[in-house]
Image 1 (cartoon, helix red, strand yellow):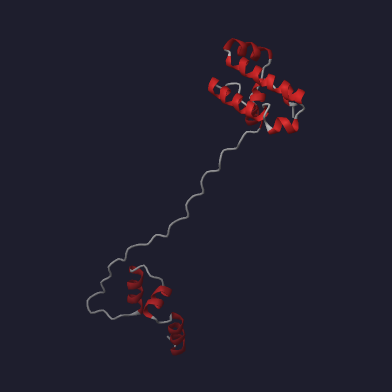
Image 2: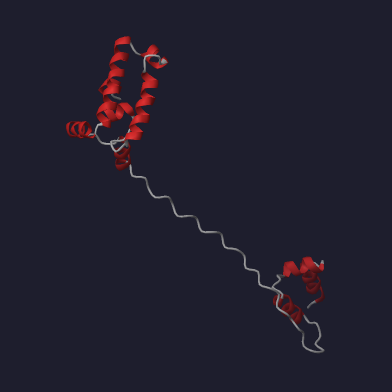
Length: 161
């Protein structure tokens, strides 16, 4: 890190080389408050000589950067790269990852009407077709009818069906 007295005018006022006069004005006021003669930082961290030199350099930076001709001459003598731009160029930020696809939503088919054939007996095949027409699994049908399909399957195996 550079000594504060060795910093460029832009670094000293903490502004970009493309700063507007309004930004320079605000930065100068902030620097004067921070390092001015009544500042705690200047009193506790800097010797009186260094504090006076720093205050003069802050004022000089303000005057040069606000005068378009003086600023152009300063920029020609001291080419300064905006540290924020240099950092951005040196460390490219990868683009954000694409958003994760939404989880597939279960498709719920509306119940299809099932009309059993006229006078047909309710066989296992006919009950299966009615269940499938409603979009129900065997487990869902067992839950709704309160009959365990495992018990029915065990009973059918015992009876030899």
